[in-house]
Length: 201
Length: 201
Image (cartoon, rainbow over all chains, first blue to last red; front, side, top):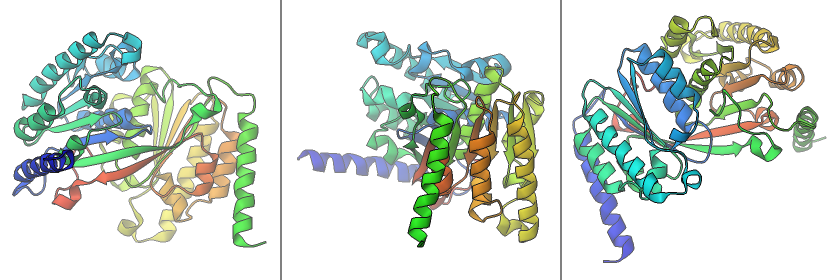
């Protein structure tokens, strides 16, 4: 079997598993949501959804796969004001070109995924944001098949899972209910403007 | 002068005004940011940015142009928890196909824009989210030239203004520093799933 046929078969399997999961479902259900693309808003819209969860008394959790080394406004915000409503796990230690230690990056991603699985399995948690997990998947720090299989077979029916980061793998897009691709129509870095507090972190 | 030439001249004027505003600016400045496109995440990423502003002690404001008639999780969230940090103005009374009263929609949009201008002019407010203003602009409830002129000439240098809604007008895109277009790569409504608490409102 050639690569194209193998790929087609794999995608069909994911689609079939997804269709089984969806069978007979109408109205409300927990969604697998992907935010990808090169534009702004992938993570921040996930954090906006967290505010909606808090407003609706839906317990939520965040696993940050890559930005752990950064001082992020969101983590400070939710940890300070909503420690009981939002469980926060920081897994990554910054992008790989900062750590320059691939083994440590892989170990951090795997540890984050183990925690993510426990949070998703917990039926009291209704919303889990896997922030920048697509970066870990892209570099194969996590196995895409394992992640997709887990989401399709073990995610509780009413739990939403949001996966962010550019270059989402095709298997994940096939498995997802909702995919938004953020395109960078215009970006200020070209004008010599650096990242801004409040906007980008 | 034909339409195409008139359009080109108009765009060049906006670009020239924008270039003047940018002159000599390096490093930090307040940005004009647009979130548009048919995909998810336009408003929610604006609300995510609000959490960043609160984390950085940057006073912020929101003017909701269209969704006023809806019970939104975000408004409840910020009004309940952060009334001192976020000024909240609800201008719209729902989409036009709900109100079926164009004059009332126009009056609501104009009232919202008057309040938006006052909030943007206030130099203590560092971040202003004009949620769904693109809908009001698209139906010409607000004049695009007036909005663009105001942003380019009166916005304080360090204030960020975020304008959301699909079908952003070309004049606004030309004037903006940062434009993200959210594409709907995949949407669950096709599977008979309705809007979900925590995710969409």
